Length: 350
Ligand code: GTP
Ligand code: MG
Image (tube, rainbow, N blue to C red; front, side, top):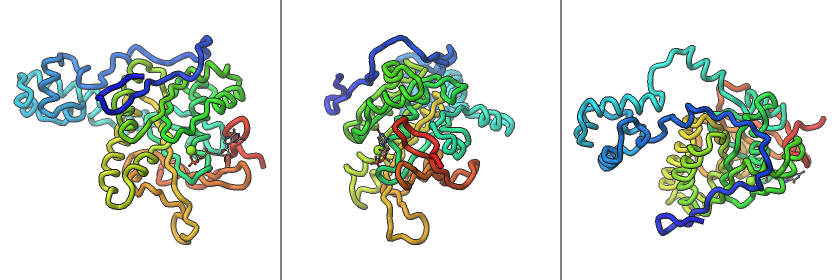
């Protein structure tokens, strides 16, 4: 364990099994490790300039990328040409430029997908859970959110031809519902050596909302830079700590503000590190509502403003669950049925 900042206790990511050889071939490239991911990676930005930039409020790539060269030069006390070069590099790192529609199409098509274990559910999602995107699983208790998260952290390890990304997962658990036994069972069911599969999942329990935010802000980027094999980041659940710590209408504004920033950091990680982010959000069933959506997100509408794919899950008879995609113009409408079996997430039997 490590203590930082005197206040919050930080627990390091732990692989959840022993190292027993390696089934997974990682797709990390050299380019990954050289990519500019923060302002300290910008060429020509040494400690001195870095301090000046941060002091002047330019602490993120975004802030630098949209600054005017004159402002940056004056604020950080650096020559105009240096400011221009730094801004250019920051823009390239964030890929801020006009693209042709064809480039947009090619980017979209090359988006990689992780299978959920159910062909029906994959079909609903246009092939599976997308990289470079945040997917929200929302639904009432027992609707299958946590089970899908467990399944995805195993499936991401599958090779490309089997619907995985040959990668590792990060599992941030805020509710204490992570079960290594379930990972073991799901891994065995698809022929993985269970300890190897567990060793490819970095797990961390978030103690409170500050800790959850700090994990995504500090620990996650550090881990992702060190281990480019990570292709999936899960936060189960995204909202529980925030709801408990900021209850009621009077706290809504500050809660939304914190949550929004947190969500945008996750979206940004998905884009920068080319990985899938999956978050869960419990919503309460409202049987008293006859019109509109009978399940209303308890967290209010914060998540509606963040880009991503929203999947609503509902309980059905026995082990069957119903999934529906909400507000995604590029995906087909409609519902599909899947099942949670002993082996994990699967298609429902007729
Ligand atoms: P909350 O976190 O409470 O909001 O619920 P959730 O949406 O995360 O539900 P979760 O994914 O935990 O689903 C729970 C359901 O999955 C249970 O009701 C069981 O039906 C099923 N389930 C969980 N573990 C097992 C298991 O080991 N074997 C089988 N066959 N089913 C399981
Ligand atoms: Mg759960």
